[in-house]
Every structure is written in C-alpha cells, then in structure tokens.
Amino acid sequence: MGQVQVSRTGSTTTTTLVGEHADSLATVLGLVRSGTARTRPEIGRHSGLGRTVVTQRVNQLTACGLLEEGALGPSSGGRAPRELRFRARAGVILAAELGATSIGVGVTDLAGSVLAEHTEPADIAQGPESVLGRVEELFDELLDRVRADTADEDLAVWGVGIGLPGPVEFATGRPSAPPIMPGWDGYPVRDRLARRYDTPVWVDNEVNTMALGELRAGTARGHGDILYVKIGTGIGAGLVSGGTLHRGSQGCAGDIGHAAVSDEDEVVCRCGNTGCLEAHAGGAALARDGLAAAEEGRSPFLADVLAATGTVTAADVSRAAQSGDRVSVELLTRAGRLIGNLLATLVSFYNPALVIIGGGVSGAGDLLLAAVRETVYRRSLPLATRELRITRSELSDRAGLVGAAFMALDELFAAERLARWVGNGSPAGDPALVEVPLRAPVF
Figure 1 (cartoon, rainbow, N blue to C red):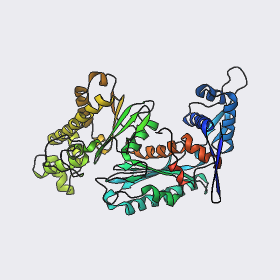
Figure 2: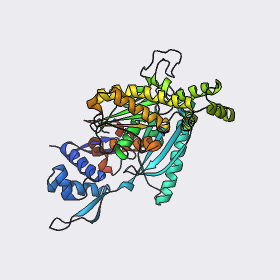
Figure 3: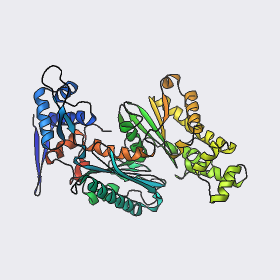
Figure 4: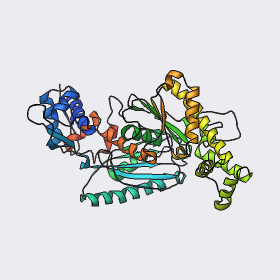
C-alpha cells in the first residue's frame, strides 16, 4: 500500500499522503482538535489505531506544527502521559456572513474562536463589486488588528468562508439566480477572494453556515439531526442529518422561503412567484403589513412610529406587539402559524431532534416562537414530536459568521485535503485545494 504520492507542476513539488496513512493522520488530528482525546493512549482507545501508528502520526503532526506537547496528563498506574494540544493559533480563517441588509466579518483561529469581528448595515442589492470590496476592506483591517495583537506580522490566512443570502452552487462557489441579489448571478465569489488572499475559499448559503455554526459551537452541539430556520428579511432552513450538513445535489436544499403557503396572488414575492412563505411571514412581509396597518389607522402604536420615522420595520411590529398592540400581535401570530404549518410538514418528513429558530425576526418576543411551537406540535406526527425541542438560536446573529469559519476548517481538515498540504505545514498559498475531491461529504 502506497504512503505518498509525488507530483510536480513547473518548479513546484507536492507530496500527498494517500490511503490509510492519510485517513489515520486526519483521525488523530481530529480527535485532538475536537478535545475528544488529549493523550496518545486516549487517541489509541478512541481510534482503534495501534500504539506505533499513533506515535508516528503524532510525531508527524508535531513536526509540521499542528500539534504541540502540553502538561502531563493523569496517570492510570504507569508513567503519566504527556497531553497534546492543537495549535489553534498557527493560522487564521477569514469568515463573513452577508445578509440582505447587513454584513458581518471576522477573523477566527483554527479552532473557530473569533479573534476580531465587525458588523455593519449593508445592502446586498448594491452588487458584488461594492459589497465584496467592502468585505475585503474589513478583512484587511481585522487581519492587521489580529496580527498586531498577536505580534505576528506573518500570521497566515489558511482559508476563507463566506455565507451569502441566496442559493449557491457549492461546487463552484457561485450564486445561482438569487432572488434578492441583483448582479450576483454566476459571480465568481470564490475566485475573486482566492486571488486576493491566495488561499482556499468556500462559499455557501448563509442559512447553511448558520446551521453549521449552531452544530459546531451552539445550541445543536451533540445533536445529529437538526433543522435550523432563519426568519429574517427572508426565510430559509439548514438541514443537518447524522451530524452532516445536507446541501442537496446542487446546494439549494432548505430553501423553504419560496415554498407555497397560500393561493392568494395579491402579494408577489421577490422571486417573482405568489403565495411564498417569505412573502407572507418574513421580515419584509411584517414591515409591509405593519405599514399598511399604520396608514389605515388600525394600529395607533405603528401610526405613531410612522409619523416619527416615516416608515415601519419588522422590529417596530415586534415592539408594538410587546406593548400590547392588537394588530401587531395578530401579525406575529399569523406569521408564526404560517411558518409552523410548513415546519410541521418538515418535522414529520425529516424527524429532527431539534428545531432552532434564528434570524432577526426570531427575537420578536415569545409570540412568534409560541405560535410556531403550537402549530408544529399540533400538526406534526405524534412520534415525530415526542422528544422534539423547538428553541431559539444560542449564537443569535453570530451563527453565520462562526459557521462560515467552521465550513472552511472542516473542509481544510478533511483527510483528502489534509494529506495534500500537511507536508508544507499550511494550506496557505494553495487555493486549488478546493478542487480536491472528497470521498465523503464533510460538515
């Protein structure tokens, strides 16, 4: 069985581990990265690898700077084993979540911990040149700050993860006919950022990155089957099955915002269709209906807001409902029931253990969440809801940012990709890593 594969392109020589060597190396690193195992004996017990193989892989990972020796661990009767630590500060990940009305960017270490971040209002409809140009400016500013804080001017960018508010073809990193993103269709987001930072880049729908953030660092830790639902300006869902993010064959799984929930044709969705869930229960819909209530004098609270600000937002509807405004209570309750009706079908079909509600509108007090819960439990199969929990996001508006970082990390440390770059000590400078095929999907 071969252990290495050597390829030459021009003046560059790449040594790639293959077969069981690559798998065992990724297994050992993954156990230490996750904190599952901290010593060589623990690695052996969890992996089933022999002592000699464990020692060889640990030595290799230590030599290339991914692991380091720590303090002595607890003894089980013999000599105390030396603990191992993952060198999370060996490099950094640039992560960004682009929403319809805001952008959040950050720099994380290799364990996904946020080292610096920034969020600001933005309009995704301004187009990719403007929006991505601003993202790059913020990346550079935060990267300079982290390098100054760590006194490491050469701290390398190991990867970039980006979440976009629309359908993304994951294999190419390009948006595909996104309803709220004029000018973005087919735009080479991955290629642009890869050229700028000379590192691997992964791009996905923002709701998928939110689901991944919750799975790896939030409410869903320890769960294998979850449904993450973002209720913001639009509505979308991220599906995790058996601990793995399910994107579907083209990457658009979970786009529930454009599922039909009404036969009414008065309201046209941003996608061009009528009857979409998003057009009746999303943040933009709440703002539209709240504005109408204010203009028609049905809501004194919202009428006062309109007079003072000239507009009504979904947040205003939420505040009005919490103040007892009857019309706003009805709007939020109706939205929750519409969302709950669709989720009830998904719960019976998919049978998740956990449904997480996130996004800006999810913070609209308890009314919306209560309406969602009541409808799901009433309309779903009893067996599907026997142990089902429906709860708010733990990471809130940071879920997408954190998830974008973990998307890049999980892809980088997949066995097939780790095997290609581990000999160089870093994936920086190898954007083509994204093209390395995987035998099985990662998170």
